[in-house]
Image 1 (spheres, rainbow, N blue to C red):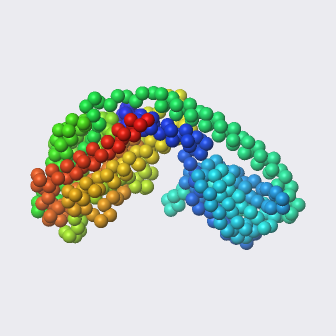
Image 2 (image 1 turned 90 degrees about the horizontal axis):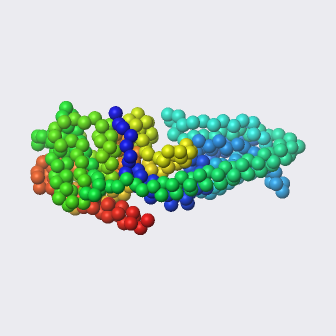
Length: 414
Protein backbone atom coordinates (compact mmCIF):
# COMPACT_ATOMS: atom_id res chain seq x y z
CA UNK A 1 0.00 0.00 0.00
CA UNK A 2 1.05 3.63 0.29
CA UNK A 3 4.07 4.88 2.13
CA UNK A 4 4.74 8.00 4.14
CA UNK A 5 6.71 10.64 2.31
CA UNK A 6 8.09 14.12 2.95
CA UNK A 7 5.33 15.91 1.04
CA UNK A 8 6.62 19.04 -0.68
CA UNK A 9 3.04 20.05 -1.46
CA UNK A 10 1.91 19.63 2.14
CA UNK A 11 4.95 21.50 3.44
CA UNK A 12 4.23 24.44 1.15
CA UNK A 13 0.61 24.43 2.24
CA UNK A 14 1.62 24.43 5.91
CA UNK A 15 3.93 27.35 5.32
CA UNK A 16 1.28 29.34 3.46
CA UNK A 17 -1.40 28.82 6.09
CA UNK A 18 0.76 30.08 8.97
CA UNK A 19 -0.71 33.56 8.67
CA UNK A 20 -4.20 32.11 8.65
CA UNK A 21 -3.43 30.05 11.74
CA UNK A 22 -2.23 33.09 13.63
CA UNK A 23 -5.38 35.01 12.75
CA UNK A 24 -7.59 32.09 13.76
CA UNK A 25 -5.77 31.18 16.97
CA UNK A 26 -8.57 32.16 19.30
CA UNK A 27 -11.33 31.08 16.95
CA UNK A 28 -10.04 27.58 16.34
CA UNK A 29 -7.90 26.71 19.33
CA UNK A 30 -10.12 23.81 20.31
CA UNK A 31 -9.87 22.00 17.00
CA UNK A 32 -11.98 22.32 13.88
CA UNK A 33 -14.54 25.10 14.29
CA UNK A 34 -17.80 23.69 15.66
CA UNK A 35 -20.26 26.05 14.06
CA UNK A 36 -23.92 25.77 15.07
CA UNK A 37 -25.89 24.98 11.92
CA UNK A 38 -29.45 24.87 13.31
CA UNK A 39 -31.43 25.47 16.52
CA UNK A 40 -34.95 24.26 17.23
CA UNK A 41 -37.17 24.80 20.29
CA UNK A 42 -40.39 22.78 20.69
CA UNK A 43 -42.73 21.97 23.57
CA UNK A 44 -45.08 23.62 26.05
CA UNK A 45 -42.86 23.96 29.11
CA UNK A 46 -43.55 20.54 30.54
CA UNK A 47 -41.26 19.66 28.97
CA UNK A 48 -39.63 21.89 26.34
CA UNK A 49 -36.93 20.44 24.10
CA UNK A 50 -34.03 22.38 22.60
CA UNK A 51 -32.06 20.75 19.78
CA UNK A 52 -28.73 22.24 18.66
CA UNK A 53 -27.05 20.98 15.48
CA UNK A 54 -23.28 21.47 15.08
CA UNK A 55 -20.77 20.39 12.45
CA UNK A 56 -18.26 19.07 15.01
CA UNK A 57 -18.49 17.64 18.56
CA UNK A 58 -19.44 20.27 21.15
CA UNK A 59 -19.22 19.56 24.89
CA UNK A 60 -21.06 22.71 26.00
CA UNK A 61 -22.63 22.51 29.48
CA UNK A 62 -25.91 24.28 30.29
CA UNK A 63 -25.96 26.97 33.01
CA UNK A 64 -28.96 28.74 34.55
CA UNK A 65 -28.67 32.53 34.86
CA UNK A 66 -30.77 35.27 36.43
CA UNK A 67 -29.62 38.84 35.92
CA UNK A 68 -31.74 41.95 36.54
CA UNK A 69 -34.85 39.79 36.57
CA UNK A 70 -34.07 38.17 33.21
CA UNK A 71 -33.87 34.37 33.24
CA UNK A 72 -31.65 32.52 30.80
CA UNK A 73 -30.16 29.16 29.93
CA UNK A 74 -26.54 29.73 28.78
CA UNK A 75 -24.21 27.48 26.80
CA UNK A 76 -20.58 28.74 26.64
CA UNK A 77 -19.61 27.21 23.29
CA UNK A 78 -16.05 26.23 22.50
CA UNK A 79 -16.30 27.89 19.11
CA UNK A 80 -18.81 29.37 16.72
CA UNK A 81 -17.98 31.79 13.96
CA UNK A 82 -21.14 33.84 13.50
CA UNK A 83 -24.14 35.44 15.25
CA UNK A 84 -27.85 34.67 14.88
CA UNK A 85 -31.10 34.87 16.80
CA UNK A 86 -34.58 33.39 16.66
CA UNK A 87 -37.88 32.84 18.45
CA UNK A 88 -38.56 29.99 20.84
CA UNK A 89 -41.62 28.32 22.42
CA UNK A 90 -42.69 26.54 25.57
CA UNK A 91 -41.12 29.02 27.99
CA UNK A 92 -38.25 30.06 25.70
CA UNK A 93 -39.04 33.49 24.25
CA UNK A 94 -35.95 34.07 22.10
CA UNK A 95 -32.53 32.59 21.57
CA UNK A 96 -29.33 34.41 20.65
CA UNK A 97 -26.17 32.89 19.22
CA UNK A 98 -22.83 34.69 19.28
CA UNK A 99 -19.23 33.51 18.92
CA UNK A 100 -18.52 31.59 22.12
CA UNK A 101 -22.02 31.70 23.64
CA UNK A 102 -25.58 30.54 23.04
CA UNK A 103 -28.36 31.97 25.25
CA UNK A 104 -32.04 31.08 25.62
CA UNK A 105 -34.17 33.75 27.33
CA UNK A 106 -37.02 32.35 29.42
CA UNK A 107 -40.47 33.70 30.35
CA UNK A 108 -40.81 31.36 33.33
CA UNK A 109 -38.67 29.46 35.81
CA UNK A 110 -37.27 26.31 34.19
CA UNK A 111 -34.49 23.84 34.93
CA UNK A 112 -32.36 21.59 32.76
CA UNK A 113 -33.73 18.09 33.20
CA UNK A 114 -31.47 16.29 30.73
CA UNK A 115 -28.70 16.90 28.19
CA UNK A 116 -27.95 14.37 25.44
CA UNK A 117 -25.11 14.54 22.93
CA UNK A 118 -25.57 12.52 19.78
CA UNK A 119 -23.02 11.78 17.03
CA UNK A 120 -23.92 11.75 13.32
CA UNK A 121 -25.99 8.82 12.10
CA UNK A 122 -26.73 7.42 8.67
CA UNK A 123 -29.63 9.80 8.14
CA UNK A 124 -28.36 12.72 10.24
CA UNK A 125 -24.95 14.06 9.23
CA UNK A 126 -24.58 16.64 12.04
CA UNK A 127 -23.76 16.36 15.73
CA UNK A 128 -26.64 17.20 18.06
CA UNK A 129 -27.10 18.47 21.59
CA UNK A 130 -30.59 17.77 22.97
CA UNK A 131 -31.66 19.70 26.07
CA UNK A 132 -34.91 18.99 27.92
CA UNK A 133 -36.31 21.75 30.17
CA UNK A 134 -38.98 21.44 32.88
CA UNK A 135 -40.76 24.13 34.88
CA UNK A 136 -39.67 24.65 38.48
CA UNK A 137 -40.55 27.04 41.28
CA UNK A 138 -39.17 30.58 41.31
CA UNK A 139 -37.26 29.80 44.49
CA UNK A 140 -35.70 26.69 42.97
CA UNK A 141 -34.68 28.60 39.84
CA UNK A 142 -33.07 31.40 41.86
CA UNK A 143 -31.15 28.89 43.97
CA UNK A 144 -29.77 27.08 40.92
CA UNK A 145 -28.95 30.40 39.23
CA UNK A 146 -26.86 31.52 42.23
CA UNK A 147 -24.95 28.26 42.16
CA UNK A 148 -24.49 28.35 38.36
CA UNK A 149 -23.31 31.95 38.46
CA UNK A 150 -20.13 30.83 40.18
CA UNK A 151 -19.81 27.73 37.99
CA UNK A 152 -20.32 29.72 34.80
CA UNK A 153 -17.73 32.32 35.81
CA UNK A 154 -15.22 29.57 36.56
CA UNK A 155 -16.00 27.74 33.30
CA UNK A 156 -15.50 30.90 31.24
CA UNK A 157 -12.29 31.76 33.09
CA UNK A 158 -10.93 28.26 32.54
CA UNK A 159 -11.93 28.41 28.88
CA UNK A 160 -10.19 31.76 28.42
CA UNK A 161 -6.99 30.41 30.04
CA UNK A 162 -7.12 27.27 27.91
CA UNK A 163 -7.68 29.37 24.80
CA UNK A 164 -4.69 31.55 25.64
CA UNK A 165 -2.50 28.52 26.26
CA UNK A 166 -3.62 26.78 23.09
CA UNK A 167 -3.16 29.98 21.10
CA UNK A 168 0.40 30.30 22.38
CA UNK A 169 1.13 26.70 21.43
CA UNK A 170 -0.49 27.17 18.04
CA UNK A 171 1.46 30.32 17.34
CA UNK A 172 4.68 28.57 18.32
CA UNK A 173 3.90 25.58 16.15
CA UNK A 174 2.96 27.82 13.23
CA UNK A 175 6.11 29.87 13.63
CA UNK A 176 8.14 26.68 13.74
CA UNK A 177 6.46 25.45 10.56
CA UNK A 178 7.16 28.82 8.93
CA UNK A 179 10.80 28.66 9.98
CA UNK A 180 11.35 25.24 8.44
CA UNK A 181 12.38 25.30 4.83
CA UNK A 182 10.20 23.23 2.57
CA UNK A 183 12.06 20.54 0.70
CA UNK A 184 13.37 22.01 -2.53
CA UNK A 185 11.23 21.45 -5.58
CA UNK A 186 12.92 19.85 -8.52
CA UNK A 187 14.97 22.46 -10.34
CA UNK A 188 13.13 21.41 -13.49
CA UNK A 189 9.84 22.84 -12.27
CA UNK A 190 6.40 22.07 -10.92
CA UNK A 191 5.43 18.42 -10.62
CA UNK A 192 2.26 17.57 -12.56
CA UNK A 193 0.89 14.03 -12.50
CA UNK A 194 -1.36 12.90 -15.37
CA UNK A 195 -3.56 9.88 -14.83
CA UNK A 196 -4.89 8.17 -17.95
CA UNK A 197 -8.13 6.60 -16.74
CA UNK A 198 -8.83 2.86 -16.97
CA UNK A 199 -6.33 0.65 -18.83
CA UNK A 200 -5.47 -3.02 -19.20
CA UNK A 201 -8.36 -5.21 -18.06
CA UNK A 202 -10.57 -2.13 -17.61
CA UNK A 203 -11.52 -0.70 -21.04
CA UNK A 204 -13.82 2.03 -19.73
CA UNK A 205 -16.56 3.38 -21.97
CA UNK A 206 -16.98 2.11 -25.53
CA UNK A 207 -17.04 4.68 -28.33
CA UNK A 208 -20.09 4.91 -30.59
CA UNK A 209 -17.84 4.59 -33.64
CA UNK A 210 -15.56 1.92 -32.21
CA UNK A 211 -12.63 2.16 -29.80
CA UNK A 212 -12.23 2.21 -26.04
CA UNK A 213 -11.95 4.91 -23.40
CA UNK A 214 -8.66 3.50 -22.08
CA UNK A 215 -7.01 4.16 -25.46
CA UNK A 216 -8.42 7.68 -25.76
CA UNK A 217 -7.24 8.66 -22.28
CA UNK A 218 -3.76 7.24 -22.80
CA UNK A 219 -3.27 9.10 -26.08
CA UNK A 220 -4.57 12.30 -24.49
CA UNK A 221 -2.22 11.85 -21.51
CA UNK A 222 0.77 11.36 -23.81
CA UNK A 223 -0.16 14.46 -25.83
CA UNK A 224 -0.46 16.54 -22.66
CA UNK A 225 2.84 15.19 -21.34
CA UNK A 226 4.66 16.12 -24.54
CA UNK A 227 3.19 19.62 -24.49
CA UNK A 228 4.14 20.24 -20.85
CA UNK A 229 7.64 18.81 -21.18
CA UNK A 230 8.31 21.00 -24.23
CA UNK A 231 7.68 24.02 -22.00
CA UNK A 232 10.54 23.13 -19.64
CA UNK A 233 8.64 24.50 -16.65
CA UNK A 234 7.24 21.19 -15.49
CA UNK A 235 8.23 17.75 -14.29
CA UNK A 236 5.56 15.47 -15.75
CA UNK A 237 4.75 12.03 -14.37
CA UNK A 238 2.33 9.57 -15.97
CA UNK A 239 0.46 7.09 -13.81
CA UNK A 240 0.56 4.78 -16.82
CA UNK A 241 2.19 5.20 -20.23
CA UNK A 242 1.13 1.81 -21.63
CA UNK A 243 -2.05 -0.27 -21.70
CA UNK A 244 -1.90 -1.51 -18.10
CA UNK A 245 -4.37 -1.34 -15.25
CA UNK A 246 -3.40 0.57 -12.09
CA UNK A 247 -5.46 0.24 -8.91
CA UNK A 248 -7.13 3.46 -7.79
CA UNK A 249 -5.28 3.65 -4.48
CA UNK A 250 -1.98 3.15 -6.30
CA UNK A 251 -2.77 6.06 -8.63
CA UNK A 252 -3.12 8.38 -5.64
CA UNK A 253 -0.12 6.88 -3.86
CA UNK A 254 2.06 7.37 -6.93
CA UNK A 255 1.06 11.04 -7.10
CA UNK A 256 1.93 11.58 -3.44
CA UNK A 257 5.23 9.72 -3.71
CA UNK A 258 6.15 11.88 -6.69
CA UNK A 259 5.44 15.03 -4.64
CA UNK A 260 2.70 16.04 -7.05
CA UNK A 261 1.63 19.66 -6.99
CA UNK A 262 -1.31 18.94 -9.29
CA UNK A 263 -3.04 15.68 -10.23
CA UNK A 264 -5.20 15.44 -13.36
CA UNK A 265 -7.16 12.28 -14.10
CA UNK A 266 -8.31 12.04 -17.73
CA UNK A 267 -11.50 10.22 -18.71
CA UNK A 268 -14.12 10.12 -21.47
CA UNK A 269 -17.79 9.90 -20.51
CA UNK A 270 -20.78 7.86 -21.69
CA UNK A 271 -24.49 8.65 -21.63
CA UNK A 272 -27.76 6.91 -22.41
CA UNK A 273 -28.51 9.51 -25.07
CA UNK A 274 -26.20 10.01 -28.03
CA UNK A 275 -27.18 13.69 -28.06
CA UNK A 276 -25.28 14.45 -24.85
CA UNK A 277 -21.88 15.98 -25.49
CA UNK A 278 -19.22 18.16 -23.93
CA UNK A 279 -16.42 18.15 -21.39
CA UNK A 280 -16.84 18.42 -17.62
CA UNK A 281 -14.57 18.75 -14.61
CA UNK A 282 -15.02 17.09 -11.21
CA UNK A 283 -13.59 18.05 -7.83
CA UNK A 284 -14.17 16.36 -4.49
CA UNK A 285 -17.73 16.36 -3.14
CA UNK A 286 -18.82 16.80 0.48
CA UNK A 287 -19.62 13.10 0.71
CA UNK A 288 -16.26 12.26 -0.83
CA UNK A 289 -14.50 14.39 1.79
CA UNK A 290 -15.91 12.07 4.41
CA UNK A 291 -13.83 9.24 2.90
CA UNK A 292 -10.51 11.08 2.91
CA UNK A 293 -9.44 10.33 6.48
CA UNK A 294 -10.49 6.70 6.23
CA UNK A 295 -8.59 6.07 3.00
CA UNK A 296 -5.61 8.12 4.17
CA UNK A 297 -5.35 5.94 7.28
CA UNK A 298 -5.79 2.76 5.25
CA UNK A 299 -3.09 3.71 2.74
CA UNK A 300 -0.76 5.60 5.10
CA UNK A 301 -1.20 8.89 3.23
CA UNK A 302 0.28 10.89 6.08
CA UNK A 303 0.36 14.68 6.08
CA UNK A 304 3.79 15.38 7.62
CA UNK A 305 3.53 17.55 10.72
CA UNK A 306 6.57 18.48 12.81
CA UNK A 307 7.39 15.93 15.52
CA UNK A 308 6.38 17.13 18.97
CA UNK A 309 3.42 19.18 17.78
CA UNK A 310 0.55 18.73 20.28
CA UNK A 311 -2.12 16.33 19.06
CA UNK A 312 -4.79 19.03 19.08
CA UNK A 313 -2.66 21.29 16.90
CA UNK A 314 -1.73 18.43 14.60
CA UNK A 315 -5.42 17.99 13.87
CA UNK A 316 -5.83 21.70 13.16
CA UNK A 317 -2.87 21.77 10.78
CA UNK A 318 -4.01 18.63 8.97
CA UNK A 319 -7.54 20.00 8.58
CA UNK A 320 -6.20 23.25 7.15
CA UNK A 321 -4.03 21.37 4.64
CA UNK A 322 -7.08 19.41 3.50
CA UNK A 323 -9.13 22.60 3.17
CA UNK A 324 -6.34 24.25 1.21
CA UNK A 325 -6.15 21.19 -1.06
CA UNK A 326 -9.88 21.40 -1.75
CA UNK A 327 -9.64 25.14 -2.42
CA UNK A 328 -6.77 24.71 -4.88
CA UNK A 329 -8.54 21.87 -6.67
CA UNK A 330 -11.61 24.07 -7.17
CA UNK A 331 -9.42 26.98 -8.27
CA UNK A 332 -7.76 24.88 -10.96
CA UNK A 333 -11.15 23.54 -12.11
CA UNK A 334 -12.45 27.09 -12.51
CA UNK A 335 -9.37 28.08 -14.51
CA UNK A 336 -9.76 25.00 -16.71
CA UNK A 337 -13.40 25.58 -17.67
CA UNK A 338 -12.98 28.64 -19.93
CA UNK A 339 -10.02 27.00 -21.67
CA UNK A 340 -12.09 23.89 -22.38
CA UNK A 341 -14.89 26.05 -23.77
CA UNK A 342 -12.49 27.49 -26.32
CA UNK A 343 -11.30 24.02 -27.31
CA UNK A 344 -14.70 22.38 -27.78
CA UNK A 345 -18.16 21.81 -26.32
CA UNK A 346 -18.71 21.66 -22.57
CA UNK A 347 -21.67 20.57 -20.46
CA UNK A 348 -23.94 23.29 -19.10
CA UNK A 349 -23.09 22.48 -15.45
CA UNK A 350 -19.47 21.90 -16.29
CA UNK A 351 -17.88 22.03 -12.81
CA UNK A 352 -19.26 19.12 -10.85
CA UNK A 353 -18.43 17.34 -7.60
CA UNK A 354 -18.12 13.63 -6.86
CA UNK A 355 -16.38 11.22 -4.54
CA UNK A 356 -14.14 9.60 -7.15
CA UNK A 357 -11.28 7.71 -5.52
CA UNK A 358 -8.58 9.57 -7.45
CA UNK A 359 -9.74 12.81 -5.81
CA UNK A 360 -9.14 11.57 -2.24
CA UNK A 361 -5.51 12.60 -1.66
CA UNK A 362 -5.53 14.82 1.45
CA UNK A 363 -2.67 17.03 0.26
CA UNK A 364 -2.58 16.95 -3.56
CA UNK A 365 -4.93 19.28 -5.51
CA UNK A 366 -6.77 17.04 -7.97
CA UNK A 367 -9.41 17.12 -10.69
CA UNK A 368 -11.04 14.46 -12.81
CA UNK A 369 -11.59 15.69 -16.36
CA UNK A 370 -14.16 14.09 -18.64
CA UNK A 371 -12.91 15.09 -22.08
CA UNK A 372 -16.25 14.44 -23.76
CA UNK A 373 -18.81 11.71 -24.45
CA UNK A 374 -17.75 8.69 -26.47
CA UNK A 375 -21.45 7.95 -26.95
CA UNK A 376 -21.74 11.17 -28.98
CA UNK A 377 -20.47 10.87 -32.55
CA UNK A 378 -18.93 14.37 -32.71
CA UNK A 379 -17.18 14.05 -29.34
CA UNK A 380 -15.95 10.56 -30.20
CA UNK A 381 -14.59 11.75 -33.53
CA UNK A 382 -12.88 14.73 -31.87
CA UNK A 383 -11.27 12.68 -29.10
CA UNK A 384 -10.11 9.96 -31.46
CA UNK A 385 -8.37 12.47 -33.72
CA UNK A 386 -4.88 13.78 -33.08
CA UNK A 387 -6.09 17.32 -33.76
CA UNK A 388 -8.92 17.06 -31.24
CA UNK A 389 -6.67 15.67 -28.53
CA UNK A 390 -4.08 18.36 -29.23
CA UNK A 391 -6.73 21.06 -28.75
CA UNK A 392 -7.77 19.51 -25.44
CA UNK A 393 -4.14 19.20 -24.31
CA UNK A 394 -3.46 22.84 -25.16
CA UNK A 395 -6.53 23.94 -23.16
CA UNK A 396 -5.37 21.95 -20.13
CA UNK A 397 -1.82 23.27 -20.47
CA UNK A 398 -2.99 26.89 -20.57
CA UNK A 399 -5.01 26.35 -17.38
CA UNK A 400 -1.98 24.73 -15.73
CA UNK A 401 0.18 27.72 -16.71
CA UNK A 402 -2.28 30.17 -15.17
CA UNK A 403 -2.67 28.06 -12.05
CA UNK A 404 1.06 27.93 -11.33
CA UNK A 405 1.54 31.59 -12.28
CA UNK A 406 -0.82 32.39 -9.42
CA UNK A 407 0.84 29.94 -7.03
CA UNK A 408 4.30 31.36 -7.79
CA UNK A 409 3.03 34.91 -7.28
CA UNK A 410 1.57 34.01 -3.90
CA UNK A 411 4.79 32.30 -2.83
CA UNK A 412 6.88 35.27 -3.94
CA UNK A 413 4.73 37.70 -1.94
CA UNK A 414 5.29 35.86 1.35
